[in-house]
Length: 333
Image (tube, rainbow, N blue to C red):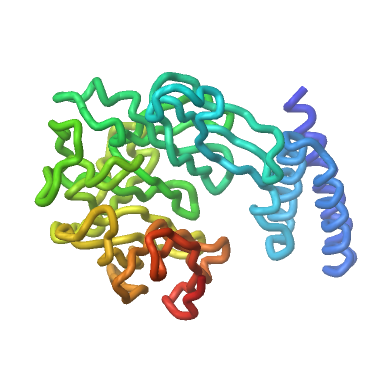
């Protein structure tokens, strides 16, 4: 049944696009617009099949400038919540969910007594990388802090949950082949249950927040296929023992990664030296974007890569949402 539906959708899309191709770009754009409007009325699963059939047919007939891969995706939000176990111990109550942008069609993807956090959908919407502490007890020696975990991969239905590597706060490369994340540069297990004060212990978290950076945290990249096949190790791209690097986000349009970095000697609860940087993977250049004595956190690129949104403290203890251009100009909150 599924195969039949895919083939018929592909055939219809090919015939329509071929027809408009023979009669000019204007008609082609109009017909494709009608097709996409029609697809919007379908349920999410049929919408993805139909739109991807249109994309494949359009690309094969030279319509790449009219139909883009993003038009095949159904808008979805991945998040963590303890909604199904609000009274359970906090670190073990959070699970991964998906929902529509309007809050409907909530579906739970993980179901266990461990802590799951920070899910991130792949560019094609078919896979999710997320963090879990489910394997902490299997470490040698066992990982004591519950806010340290590993990165896992699963499908958008929750199937095939597979451990990738130790790490936190993962983000996908534009082609969906790589991920970036922060983790301990030493890879050592933390021998204490309470985050130690400065000078800290390599492998131990700097504070009790979920997915907190370790005292020797750097930014890494890794090929997902290489991790699944146990053929490749993550690559450290910052190597900064004098700083704590965390919260990376991969640009959707370039080989650049934005992240936060602050001094090891800083106050880890209010890191006034925490600034935002961009690492260019092609040139190796490191560019600092913020310059102040207030904490900045969690940078993330806009879909077109032209701006960066981030958490900022501006004259008070609470975080605000700030935005700046990709080159650090035009800061506002």
